[in-house]
Length: 330
Image (cartoon, rainbow, N blue to C red; front, side, top):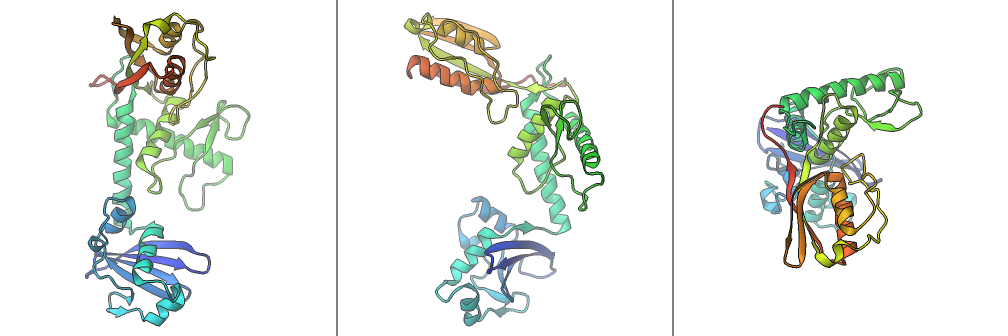
């Protein structure tokens, strides 16, 4: 069974390492910390440290096999109270010491578990990307295999650009984030384009999926675009023909690299329709006008702010589908 070790330097109050070491016998995991010259360990159940830190597990009894601090779990040697007092402070309860180890360690795992963790994150990233990007012509999603090949191509290009920029590969052999200029030079003038160098275990799958989508859309290894949102916008009839008061905004959503294009000027209705790429239906229901249509994700924030501001809260923007796609091969 793997063993977790946490190394902790009290002098700088920085957690240095949490390592998984193969172990044939129980306990499943041991969190080990170094405080000064002393090394302390706590026995934990397998995989529970990550669940505790992510908030999935909230019961400490389900994380700890034994609510004690050890000098050596494998030998059953508990840590003397005087040593703990000297290392962590005389008034620090054992539970607080345990919580510090659980909450503030930097996790490093053994080779097999590291590979399994990387594979899990990688698959999650690919699934997220494949569900949000489409062929811009057919509006069909790409298979995960095609997304994988496109990202592999970008990763290879990113590694080449990094090699060219640095002269030599990184000493660790691990790709690091870089930016490529619009003209293809790593350090030339021009607009910087996002690059993709592969999945890591130190960032969430969601944030890495956003990075991957930006790189794919910027470099276009295959024809690709964000799947559009399907929205319903309602607005009082009396406001539709009024001249728009707010100046068109050019904003970008957090996960959209292009931002919004300048919207048409005119009435409130004209401006609302200017945000919509394709109108599905529009109708007058009593005293309200309603339109259902498809909008680029990057336009959603600006549209919501415009409708809310012009109607003083009387208009609404409702999300009917976060990403409209057509299933099947592109």
